[in-house]
Every structure is written in C-alpha cells, then in structure tokens.
Length: 623
Image 1: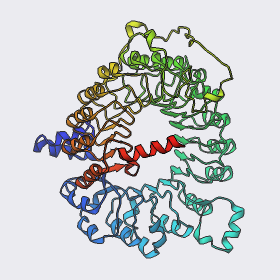
Image 2: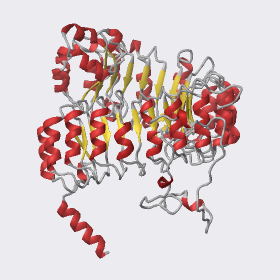
Image 3: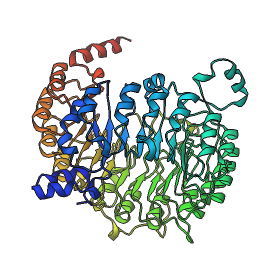
Image 4: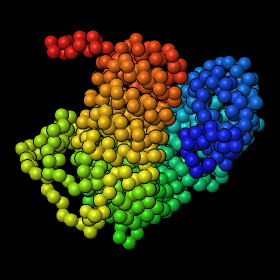
C-alpha cells in the first residue's frame, strides 16, 4: 500500500478493517500531511489521529483557545512536523501547544507576528525539551523579529540544521548599525546576530534561506567563509543586491552545495553560472528563473554537471535551443539524470531542442515548456519518448493543434490562425514580444525546419494518452485544440490536475470525456470556456468522486442549476471559483456557502449577476 497515492490509500482503507489498519502503517503514513482549519476539526479527528505513531500537522486560522489544546494534548507528543504559519497565536498559546510536542523535528512559524511581539524569556525556556530534536525551522516574513527574540529562540534549538529567514527585515549594512545601536536597535534583526549563531553552530548547519532580503555580496561572502560551515542548500532568490562577485565567492568557499536558488537575481549574469559549473561539482538543484542576463554562453557549460537533477531557466529570454542542446544534450555526456526541467517563457526555444532532448534525456518526470515557440513536432516527440513523465505544462503554446494531441500528421487546414487578439503571424498584440519585431516585417508562411536525425518517423507517432503516468497536464490558452482531440486522448487513470482554461473551442463533449477517462482527477480548471453548459458540469460532478478544486469562472452559459448539482453530487469539493459567471446568481452562491461550511469560494467578491454586467457594459459603451 506504500506505493499508492494518498487518495488511493483513502479509498483502499474503506474496503475492510484489515486494509484500514494497513493504511495506518508507519511506513505508509510517515510523510502524510494533514491540515486543520479550526480546533473543532482537530478535535473531531482525534479518533483517527490516535492510531498514528507519527503526525505531520498544518494548523490554519488558529485563535487563542487553550481549552482546545488540552482536548488534543494526547496527540501532540507524536507530532514530528508542525506548521502554524500565519496564525493569530499569542506567546501563551504557542508555549502551551509546543511544550507538548516533545518529538518535534520541523517547525514553521512564518508570519506569526503576535508571537514575536509578546514572547518572554520565561515562555521560551519551557520549550527547551520540545526543541531539543528540532532540525528545520522557518521564521519567514515576521514583522517584529529582533536580535533579542532571535537569540532567545535559537538558544533552545541545539540540533538545528536548516533555517529560513526569508522576507525578513534584516539589517546587513554594518555602517548603519552604529546609528541603530544608539537609538532603537532592539527593534531590528541584524546580520551580526545571525552570524554569531551560525559561527557557534557551523558544524551542523547545512541549509539557509535568505530569499527576499537585502543580503549583498559582502554579507554573502562573509557567510560562505565561516569556519567549519559546509552548506548543501542556499536560497537567495529575489535578492537584488547579489551579483556575480558574491556568487563567485560563495561557490569557491562552499563547493559542497547541492541546491542553489538564484531566482530573479537581476544582477546575476553568465559569470555566476560559470562559477557554479567550475566550483560546485555536486550541484543537484539549480534555479535561475528570471535571471534574464544569463545566455547561451554559460548554459552550454552545464554539460559538466553530470549529477544535475532539477534545472529552472524560467523566463531567461536570451537562452536559445542551440545553447540548451550544447549544455544538456552533449553527444559525449548528456544530462541523463535530469528529472525536472522548467523552460517556461523561453520564447527562443523551438522544436529542434525539444525533439533532441527527448532522445538524450528520456527519464524526465517534470517538464514545463509553457509559452515556448514549439509545435506539434515537440508534442509528438514527448508523447512517444518521455513515457515516464508525471507533469507536463504546455500553457500558451499557440501552435499546438489536434494533430499534436492525437499523434497524427499535420493537416494543411490547421495552420491559419483565428485567435482573438493575434496578428497575422500568430503573435499576441498585447505582449512585449510583439514589439520586438521590425516594422513592415511580413511572413506569408512559416519556414519548414530541416530534418534532423532526432526527428520521429511517421510510424513512431503516438497520441498524448501514451503518457500513462501523467498526473498534471496544463493546456491553458491552447486555443487551437478542439473536442476532436480532447475527447479521444483524455484517458489518464492517474491524472490529478487538468488545466483547460481559455481553450475556447471546447464544449460539453470534452467534459464528458474528462469525466469518464480521469477517475482520479482532484483539480480541474475550466475558466473562460464560453461553450460549456450545465449538462457538462453535471457529468463532471456525478463521475469525478475525488474532485476537490473546480474553477468555472467566466463561463457565461452556466446557471444556478450547476450550483444545485454541485451541492448534491460533490462530497469532496473544497474550493470553487464561480467569479464572473453572469448566469449564476449571488443568492445561489450564498446558499451553497451556507450549506457547505467546508467550501472555500475563491474570488466571490468579483461575482456579478446578469443585471450588473448589463449595466457595466452599457457604461463601457457610453465611454
């Protein structure tokens, strides 16, 4: 049973008593995370939790109620991981709760501002036993953390290995510290205080997160050169002050890095990636998303990173198919261990690289090529060769047609574009890429690329349904696909999440195929599908018994009958988005929210009736 996903184990546990106890085996449930929004939900789940030897809990929307803590006190000694992020929790409740968690290993107290305003030394002293085994601590986005509260909390964490201080107001400028010490220094968390803790615990700290802070090259270099410090994970994403100089010093002093996150570091260039490739031989996860100064000059040097598992180059606009082929698909040493590749919004990535990559890296599990300049050739190669793929994102790939999904030869009638908002070349008029083309540039027909040794033969074509292990598929805004392909390829027994929003040519025929071919679906996005009706949503609600998230926003042909069917048929639905559905009344939505207290209605404030929309349209016409 350990090989089953959580929804499958839940279904298996209902078969008989023997299977129920098998589903509670520690080898099976050790990584399960359970979320509770109120103390009453936690109290009602006590009979189930009492049978588990290891618990991972997420508590949300928690308020001061010590009586509830006492009711659930018998389960807390078995809690290994606990998250109380963004809870309105005072120091007294925090102490009362965590003093019972004597085996705690992971704790997340991010955005708990009240805790750090009201904490006292006496309260923290009670946590010494509870925090003795704590290995991972997240204190992200805390408004009032200071040197005093930080030192007090770290003093009771003798076994800490991973620390997250992301998005905190940390003072790194040493010149500014003199003025702070003479005034209100106690209100700030300084880098000197953090360095003091790291120096005292350098032998055991392996992971740090300074994302969204003002850390600069000087601080990063000082951090990397702490004696006996050997980091395996470091996150400095969204840090504008980090440059190539700081990354070079980091890689030189910390060659044991396995995870490096430089997401959206605007000053990072090719020199930083070259430093990583030359110094960090054991890198496993590399995130360079939105580092727009990274080009093919450094990407081609990734061929030396034979152990790379995950690579994120999201929105690196200068990276092309040529550089990726040299870096990832080297004829002598391709990155065969790569399992996750994110190339979203890389407009210069074309079919030539995707087809070659499917030959050289057949073990990919997660692939994101949203908004890339790819067509049916890429999709056919993916369907035929990447048979182990679990997650595939193809959002806004406007060249994809029914032939790509069906695995057939392209038809001449598929090439003309009729998408709203596109020009004669198929480029969206509202994007920044459109204005990068020279004026009066006219191309009557898209050039046919030369054949490559990696191209598929027609006999090797396979439909998308050949990816039997697929769990997530994103076809958002692929406007050229129709019911002809969707109704034939949507046969995935393990599919958990499907995104079909903005695919304007889909109708109830596609919804009927989804309801039959995807019995395990939990999340479904159908926003802006103007042709679907109540009958299509009814089939979804009757057949998808595990559906927990449904987005039907801006579907104008849906009425209150849809809300009624969702109420009677969907027992597992937890999130529903009906915003801007002009045919659904506010009264029906309010009634559904009242009858199903566990349901979260997303974007309900944007909901408007037919009358309101008609008035707004008249006002727009007058303007």
